Structure formats: structure tokens, C-alpha cells
Length: 441
Image (cartoon, rainbow, N blue to C red):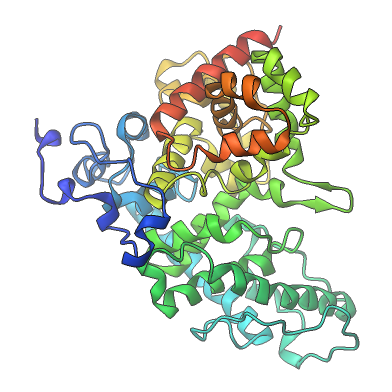
């Protein structure tokens, strides 16, 4: 079969696409993922999945990704669909028009940020505070006043944009808060994926900093939080055009921004930790009771895994593989319409339950939720992945964990020792078990 032809490119080691600095090779987890001809979504298979007009056969793409991931040469393009940047039911021309529009909108946003802080877009990054946190009566140049309406993306762009208030005092407060985050973004950027040869280039570090600075400005409810650089970095590496990479990251943050939303007495990820607790209690009551007896009932030891989607537990390559497996399993063909429309009725998933052809356009995880009548956004696949990690270490946890420090130590042993595909398969098993235990009547 032509789709199974082995090419020199398909035989290249994944690490060769994301080179590791020689002095860091012993410090990073070993990569397990290897593209497999006939299983991994290849460039040839990807391009043949489009019709002459540009419509994408998303069902066949999802099947192939779930079998063997995505080849490194096309990851960025595929991720744009998995994350809902583009509608598989759109044409080449429609996507080209939308891409150009978004690039223009990103340049406007970046220009606005540059007016407020000249380092944006300069190829430099800021790592020292611009403003002391207790500083008052800060004066801003006229260019930092509210932008005209046409300087900002419209709601049709699907952006998480703040309302531009006419109150100059309120706007100045927003600028101050934004500037207070810029050095923290810089400090995180220089630490992010520093084992990659890619980030030896100062321009690439600056590109990541610019994207995070712009995001921090448009999503002022969340701003910037540690961990976002780990989520944004792969977009920067995979997608050549900065604006395209930015909007891909922005779509990812739509899934995850709730984890970063904090109040004076809680952090957003606690809702997912609470759901994890519920899942373990349902599928393994004995383990849950043991964890509770260790005063770990809030499951805070799983904080990092959920916040940055296992970036620290896997090599760079394997974390990309894990993400695309997760997103393909969670895929909802209405995702583009949901993001582009403020109307929640854009999600007509329930119509697919009785239509086999429509159901094929959903990922395996999402299909199970639909059939079970579940629409719980607080229970993404990542929660069941963490549950699978705990279940796989059930005996050790019950026997060896005498305190929370022991739980953390046992879980730390998973770094570099997890198989992404196997972990996803186990997560799906736990998901099925959970649905049976908590069946909606």
C-alpha cells in the first residue's frame, strides 16, 4: 500500500527534529515515541485526507493519530485542527482568508503591547522588574491610552479579549498589572525547555516571550501564571509563523485557563483535583481511603501533572505525542463553531448520538461521554490519565506510602518511565469503569 511506503524522512529519529544540547542529554527523559509506517499519521496520509476543495476527512485522521501519533514534519498543521483553530468542514480558501485575518489581528495586538513596552517585538526579553509592586502614581505616555475599537480583534476572531474601559485610571491599573508580569515571563522563558538546541537562539526565546506577553495582555482575568511557558513552548517550536503559533496557544488555553484562575482562597486547578478525587473514590475506594488517611484527600500531589499536562514527566517528544493522543481522543467536531460563537447552541453534539457517521468524527473519549449522556467539562482525559498513573502504582502506594512525601516520591519515579499510548489506553479503561459506576439514569 502506498500509505505504508517507508521514506528516509519517516525513518528519522524524532529527537533529530528537536535536537537536544549535548551537555543536557543525560538530564532529560529518554524518548520512547518512534513514528511507525502504517500507523503514524504521515505527511502523505495527511495531505491525501483533504478533498480537492480542502475539506478534511477528520474521522480518518483521528483514527490514524490514535493508532500512532503524528509525524514531526506535520505536527503543527495537524494541531491547528485538533485544537479548533480551523474547521475540517472549511475549504482551503476559507482557511487562508481566516489565517490572514488572524495574523493581522495578532500584529495589531503585538503593536499595542509594543506601545506600552518597547521590548515587545525587539528580539529582547525582560527578566528584571519594570515596576516595583508598591510603586504609585506611574505616568504613561499617550500611546498607552485605550486603543480605538478597530485596533482590537472583534469577537468574531474568537479571542479572550478584555473590555477596553474608557476610565483611564482603570486602564492604567491594567497596564501596571501587565508590566508587573513581564519579568516573570522572562524568568520562566529562559528556564523553559532549555535542553533544546532551538532555544540557544535568543530570537526564539524572544518569540516565546512576545507570545506570552501578548496573551497576558488580552486575557487580563488570568494574565500570566507559571506553567504557561511550558504549554506555549511546543507551539513556538512546531509552528513557524508566530501569529499562527499564538492562536494555537490561545486555543489550548481555552481548555486549560480555568486551571490558572485564582481567587484569594483557591486555585482553579482545585476543581480538577476534586474531580480526580471523585474518580479515584469511584473506581478504587480502597486507594482513595488510603490517600485520605495520609491527609492527601485534596490530591495536591497531582497539581503539576494537570497544570502542564505531564510536560515534566515525559521527554519533549513524548509529551507532544501524549498531547496529540489526548486531543484526538477528546476531539469534538463542533469545537471550531463553539469557539467562534458565543452561542452555546453551537455545540450540537447530542445530535450525533444516533448517527454513526457523525460519531466517527468524535474522538474515542468524547464518543463515550456522548453515549453516556455526559457533558462534564471538569472531567477531561488528563484527569483519567492521572488516575491511571495512580492505579498502576496501587500496590506500591498502599504498601509503601506512609505519608504524602512517600506518595510524591513514588510518583516522581514515573518521569521518563511512562509510555504515552499505554497510559492513554489505561485512562480510557478507567473512564469506562467510572462511567459504569456513576451511570446517568
